[in-house]
Image (cartoon, rainbow, N blue to C red; front, side):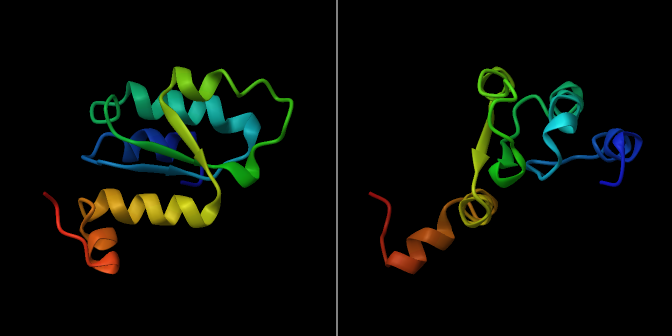
Amino acid sequence: MADQLELKTACESLFELALIDVASADLVECISTIRESPYGADCPVLVASERLSSGTGLAGMLPKFRAMPCVYDDLVRIARWLITGGQWEERRRNLRPL
């Protein structure tokens, strides 16, 4: 999203996953907007950790908003797993659920 207004507008539509890659200064407002939206209360929120600066006091904020910091490769892997319902990972390793 280009700005907060665009994010608020997008959050009015159905979504099941939020991937966030914003500057640390914008993170709290961005996650708050998602969590307060009609569909954002229970959706997974993944945050690109490369953009997080150390010492910003965000360590306690991410758990509060139930957001998970991820390096980019893990962010993509987890998003793919959530989108496919875990099928992608199971196929790749040729595993079957019990």
